[in-house]
Each structure stands twice: as structure tokens, then as C-alpha cells.
Length: 175
Image 1 (cartoon, rainbow, N blue to C red):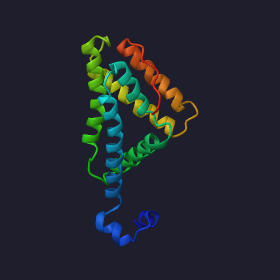
Image 2 (cartoon, rainbow, N blue to C red; image 1 turned 90 degrees about the vertical axis):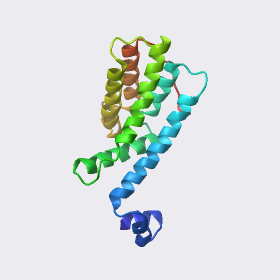
Image 3 (cartoon, one colour; image 1 turned 60 degrees about the horizontal axis):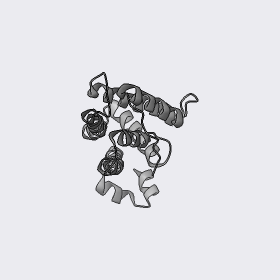
Image 4 (tube, rainbow, N blue to C red; image 1 turned 180 degrees about the vertical axis):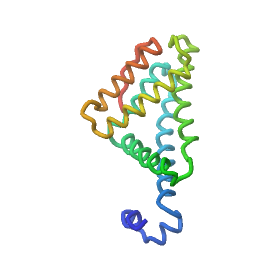
């Protein structure tokens, strides 16, 4: 708590006034980062005229922890999982994980309904596999594993989505 207070330029008392312990700070930081990320995803979902493939390509790109806020959010999740696994924190991520999953589920359902996507497997299964790839490959990319760059991660996730949904995703770029 002292280190947090020092980094924030506050007294320890002020930090303790708002947070009982460092785990509460972690959860607050994670929720704030998640809300900001959801704002970026909401903007994609609300952009008029985008096809389901465009939305999916943009959601995937936003989920690649290349640099900046996406990378920092991924690292916050690492810390949250480390603390949660050891029982030092109550489960605080269910709603956040559900919300993240829902973006992909909604866009895939939209694409299936419009005929743009033609999956052989149930959309819910594709979403779970897609999220598993994003999580697993994201860990390797953030850890700097020599075999998994963010660019390679992006290629693998896009290939999976294209093959699973039988669609060519358009190129997406960071805004």
C-alpha cells in the first residue's frame, strides 16, 4: 500500500481511506480498464454500416495485446488471476468475462443470421474456442515467447475465425 501511495503521490492514509488492501485496488483497476475496453468494443458494435465480418475483425484486433492499453489490461488480468487462484480475492470477474464473451457471441450470431457466416459448429462453441485462443496465445505473446509475437497471434486467431465461420475477414487497423 505504501508503494501504491508513493506512486500516486498520496499519503498511505488517503489510499487506506478508499481501499482496505491492495487487492481492492487491483479489482478497481481491472474494472476501470475493463470499462474502458468495453467502451472501445461498444463503439465498434454501434458503428453503423459495418458488416459482421468487419465487426469481428475489429473485435479480434482489439483483443491482441500488442501495446498500450490492451497490453496493460492483459497484464492486469494476469495479476488478478494470480491473486484469485490463491484465494486472496473473491471472484470479481464473472460479469466482466461474460460481457467480453457477449461481444463475440453477438457479432457471430449477427453474421450467422445475415448469412454472412456459415459455420458448421454451433456459434457458442466457436466463441469459446476463439476466446481460448485469445487468452492462451495472448499469454505467450505478452510473456515475449519467441514463437508467439502479437502479429503471429493475430494471424492465427483470424485464420481460426475465417475457417470456423467460412468467411474472409477484412483487414482491420487500430484506431
